[in-house]
Every structure is written in C-alpha cells, then in structure tokens.
Length: 385
Image (cartoon, rainbow, N blue to C red):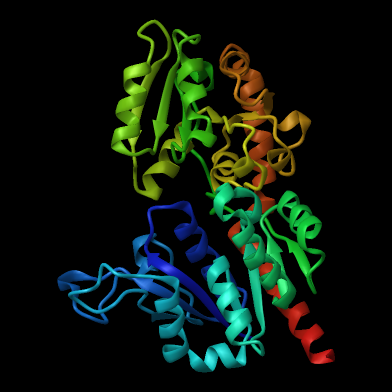
C-alpha cells in the first residue's frame, strides 16, 4: 500500500502533534506501508531553498525504509516567506505530489486542507483524522463556518479516524455517520525498562508535563500546591510569560514548584521515568472533551501513579482503579488526590505498575496497525463501489 500523508505545518514542530505525526508515519512504515510524508519544511542550515530539517532526525526516530519525505512549502518564496496559508500548501501539494493525490489513499488531519481536497479533488480517496470537533471548539463567530467545513469533509471522506470515542460520537451527532468511522487513540514510545523509582519519597517526585493552556488546568495545580507543604512538583513546558505569571502566584508555604520550561522530548521522558506521581489536571472544557493526550500515555509508559481530572475522555483510557480521580477545576480536590498518593507510597507504586502494564496497548506500533487496518477497509469499500 502507498499512502500520501499530508501535514501543512512546519516539521519539526514544538507542539505535541508534530511528534504524533512523525511517530504515526514511522509506525505505518514499520507496518509495511510505503508512506510519503508531505510536510511544510523548516529551512535547514543556511536557509537554502529545498534544504530542510529532517523531522525524524529531530525527534531521534529511525525512519523506516518505506518512508520518504516531500518538502511542500506553505509560504511564498523569499522575500515574502512570511506569507503562508493552507491554500499555498494545497497548490504546492497538487504540483509536487500529483501522483499521490490521484492514486490515493491520502491521509489528512487538517480540516481546511481536507475541505479543499473534498471540494477540488472529488475523486480523491482520503481519510480524515479528527482530533477535535471544530464545530464545537471554534470561537462562536467561526463555529458555523467550521461546521460547514466539517460537514463537507465527513460526507466526502472515505474514512474518518477519531482520536476518541467522544470525538466520534459528536461528529456522528452533528453530521451523521461517515462511510467508515474508527476510533484510534494516540500512542507512546514505551521504554523497555525503567530505573527504580524512589517510591518511599514519592511526595518529592511529582510531575506535570505539557502545555500551559488554561484548559490544561495547570493553574489549579499551582493553587493545589499551596496545600501540599513538603512536596516537590516539577512543571515541564509552558511559555516564558506564562511561567512568570505562575511563579508570581506560587505560595511560599506550599510545595516547592520547579518550573523546568520546555525540554527536548528525550529529556521529558527521562524526567517522567524518574517521577513517581504524574498529574493530568484538565478542566471540564470543550477542548478537554475531545482530548487523547499523548502525555497520559507517556505517564503510563513511565510507570507513574496518575492523578487525573474525572473526565469522560480520560475515562476512555483508564479504569476506576487505575488512577486517582478528582473533580475537574477544583484545586482542593486536586491537592487531596495528590496527597492521597504522596502519603501512601505503596498504593502509588501499585498504581504505577498497573498503568505501566496497560501502556503496552497504546504503543505507536499498535496505533500504526490500527490505522493501516482502517486504510485497508477503506480501500476494500472503494473497490466494491
């Protein structure tokens, strides 16, 4: 099978979806799919046209033999390189990857690009990967516009892959069922082995890793820290301005909070491997409703005991006895959940070992096999038409 995987954003990318794309493509390649990754390039040394950073090398991921790279610009040439858009990417994609678009299948995870393909290339066989429902998460002024786009894409797609059952249910409720709908959550590169964790001192090895967007609940975690004297909490990620705001709100009488800032992914995984308790404090927000957080799977693979907001999207992954569940947006409840594990190292260790075992279900290779199966089903359906 040959697959054109489109990604109209620069790779490598600071956001988690950059890693998700490269890991998914690598997993598909290992599963025997010949993949062309058509991505917007980040210029390499010297900035010469055509020279770009290899996203696989950036993420320290081996590129399978069947995976090829196609740098597809989304911006105008210098001196107008600051001008970029999905339309420019689509035009260059048609020019640079015409055979892949015509032969299919095509993998798309950007709504506007998927709508362009649906409208301008009606014969294209494409799968749309939905990571949220833009008809709900967009600002009120753009909500109807996004629903029109989603309705167009869902009707035209040969298959839709949703990152969670919640995403799939909402897409069906808004637009009806697509030709083929599958739920495939995100994944993780699971370490074969972990160092011994200092469970007896779990209170001093608490971690949060991820972005600092308000809906992620980091503000509540900082507030909860005021109720946790004697604890040490490392916060990994965040922009400098947001970090400064949070540092100013820290209580001197609570937990010691370490603002580690953004770290390379390998360094993040090393920090998680040494942590005992990991926190996922998402608020009950529209964005949280459709999440399939890579960090959750990374917490699991690192063998951390998890304190998580009690939200349906997270309950899809973890069972009742696989996390300490707390009320979303409630700093007091979050502090109590963390304290319950910090004061009971044996329980924390048992939870960590349990989710470490479960993480084997969510490897990138498992995800690649599931995506490949969807592609094969889509092609069989198309052959029967």
